[in-house]
Amino acid sequence: GMMGVFFLTSLYMQIVMRLTPLQIGLAFLPFPIIVGILSNRMPKLIARYGFKRFLISGLVIAGVALAWLVRLPVDGSYIMDLLPSLLLLPLGMGMIFTPLFTAATSGVPPREAGLASGLISTAQQMGGALGLAIITGIAASAAASATNLAPKAALVHGYNQAFLIALVFVVVALILSVTLIKQPKKTA
Image (tube, rainbow, N blue to C red; front, side, top):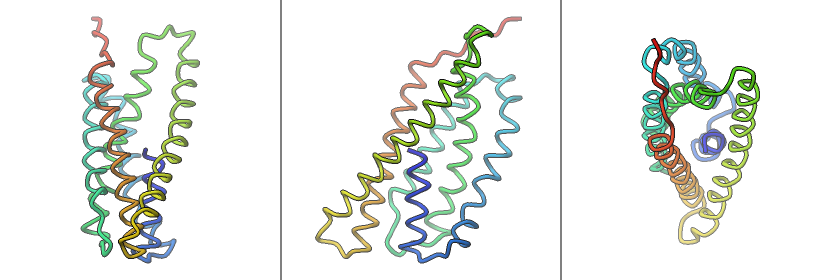
């Protein structure tokens, strides 16, 4: 659902908030900074504490960010309505990516680690494309069916419904992470 979130958030800023492409680019600036900082620190943190707690914490934080987006208003402001999510979402994602790859390759024989990593990368890209298709389809459908709302309000309603589905994806990932992913015991 994250690929769709970037797309729809960009559309919200462009169409609803009337921001320019430069302003939208600057609005997303916290994202690569936070993800970059966390990505550099995660390997040491995972080595010390394990990957599962970061994977779960990252999903919870990403879920909170998406829950914030579910309530975007028609007359939203960057500081109050978008910035909190644009600070929390990269924090959550930065905590998810490295642990996800670590979990996917843990217990895999060294000669098959490249294959496992390639499979998770492919699944991530395919999931992103599928998630984008699903949530943009939901956004368009919800907006089109909101005939009782003004056009801009119907559009925002569609975005909110799509963000809700992205949140559902994160909750499912959280449930799967808690129940299925096992943290290997450290060997001395």
